[in-house]
Image 1 (cartoon, rainbow over the protein chains, first blue to last red):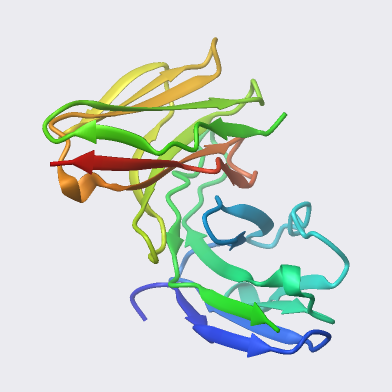
Image 2: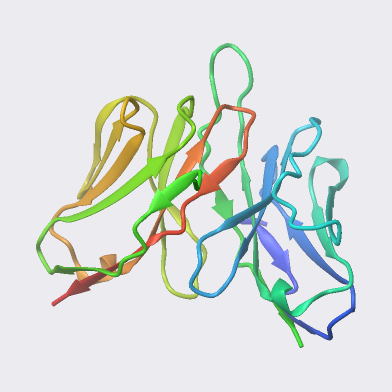
Length: 120
Length: 111
């Protein structure tokens, strides 16, 4: 597709259940980010994938959160044993990146429409 | 101390005036700076990027960067009601690093 695609757009689950959120980035984008946005708040960084490098997981709030990116493309964010405080919009973004030769990536992020998670 | 700080607002500006949005960051070696606009219920979209000290203009928008003061700002000239949104400041330390966002400033343009 032309843009970043996220699914599901809405997910309602019961406390204690596991959920998986999917992100399909723009073709050719090597960088992929997951952010979380609670109502009226800013974007909370969760995890960052850049090419074949080890992901930056420094933003994951607990070990209930994990993410993987298969084949350098599609990414899945998994939340185990969901809690009510996990309720938020989960945003995925991708970007082009340039490495080496003193150049750096533009950093322009293209966001998906988000997955709204509600934990009852 | 937060890595990227913004006044949450709301900032109310009359139509046609200049809106000034400010952001400070804590990591002195940060290299790339961005302003994103987010309408209510929508995803953020990039307005401006700036990498060097000084001003960068694009239409009604001007981004200003002062690395010595660790300060970046966004000026919106001739503010329109359609500019009413939340403006997010974002900072990237290096080419291989993550992008960190501030909590955003809510801007309201009153007719």
